[in-house]
Image (cartoon, rainbow, N blue to C red):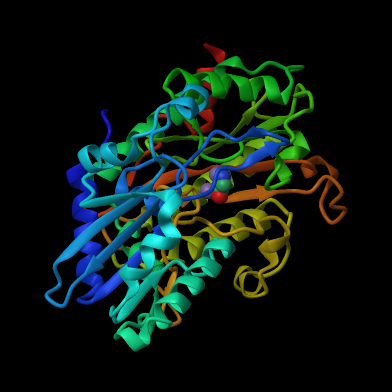
Length: 438
Ligand code: GLY
Ligand code: MN
Ligand code: MN
């Protein structure tokens, strides 16, 4: 799919300025470039909210949106100037003319002139919307600009009197995905599902975890995508380490392997976990625990419905996991009391999901006025229950130890019920064993 049309970004800016009201200004910076070590840098990825509003993915850029007393608005972009010598080293820049022509800016300035040019924008505005607390250096600079604007008081100037967190508005906008955003997320999900399928087909006992990770990266790379977070490929007990990313151990015959990996497409992320046997066949214990997690996951997906509150799927998951753990003898006691005491924490210590979008742990509050918020159409959430029996857990029979299982899908809330974006990768025991045999 080609890049989103500028009209999409423009309508986002229009919605934002409407929410800001008249006589206001918003200043939004993108992320800095980052070094990995010495002068070797990470591949650049724009700040998600900046990109959401601009579609502009070059570093060193600042967007300014301002409204006048009538609520009319203008959009100014500060960007890197074109520079032939630099472009020979680091690549094409849109430059001032480019952002005016291709990115719909009403005005553009060199980023080098930001400190000088921005102060007049602040004069006589009532409200200043910023993303305070995200980039420390930038917070300090905004403070300096306000200070300079105030020095112009005797000439009738002055900095805005109200400073408001822009993210409160922006995050709510990003939380509800439009049809074109869901389309991009579906593409990210499809590519990621293909990568998991390939991993299931490629795994062999003795293979290194990183070699299996390479099978995923092959599919991502073939589609011009990068992982949306560091891939987790954990064999056996490594599957019990929630953020295991070393991926440097051999995969053993008889163990499960847990893969939590996905890519992003045009800055929209997928997030998938599958757990499957290295040799293609679940053992009795692996099967028993897997069935419990899968039952919990299917029920939680079903509960991801308009009107249900955010935490409802988690409550369903903790009940089903607790019942399963009691049935299998890993917990003992009365189910309601065990849930009340959160006894499942021993084996299930994370939440059941999070918002998903341009960021893998996407923006948006989870509570409103102290209450879990209800699901609305257009929200996208992950559903990812798991069970992790630590290898040194002496409270359970030895046969269970070192088994880690998580199953994670990406779900869009719709008026017609949950829509699973990641359904293309199998997850029932029969389907996994069947795929791995062929
Ligand atoms: N892959 C990160 C998560 O599942 O939350
Ligand atoms: Mn997740
Ligand atoms: Mn995940």
